[in-house]
Image (cartoon, rainbow, N blue to C red; front, side, top):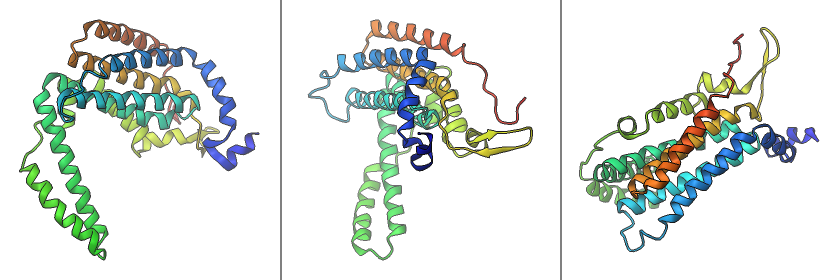
Length: 274
């Protein structure tokens, strides 16, 4: 019964039944998502074994892992949308979009991209260890570990800086609207902001409202648009890396279908709008 929502929230078995209604209500989007997933997976599998024997940190093996993770994130977004958790799925769509930036960077400037990926990883590892030091003042073993590791990483980093920040290479090498979509996903869904919190308000009258948890099934078309567009961007970059023009053409056709379906989505109204 619906009462289970008050004990289990969005983990309630009620959502198992509602899932069927969501799949029916948004059948066009879920079908397009499945087709996009199949195309993306076919591209990944086509070059699955071709990187054997290459160094793990070489461009193509690294790109394959980024692309593979994007495919998995996309699948997670679709599964969440099937249960009406579209707001939560948007964070995964955002992750797919970020992957598309790195893949596009690799496809256009592979040496710089691999350099910046290494710099980013080392810099963040150093920052994490420094935070570990901060929160472990009375833990000699942890402090000794961090104190020993940080100088090694600093030496490996060697004072290097990123050639380009993510917003720069996203705009320079990504698809025309990909960075805008990333910012929309961040501001409207993922980041804590006044705008993103409006999804958790239910208007009950002219000047009255109350807070709500979800689900947010009305956002399914919006989020699947972002997710499918991002996965297609990832595939386009990966097809460029693998010089696969036939699949690139299929991706271009799929992008046209996504845009056509996007144009059928009714405009969103935020709470308080007439």
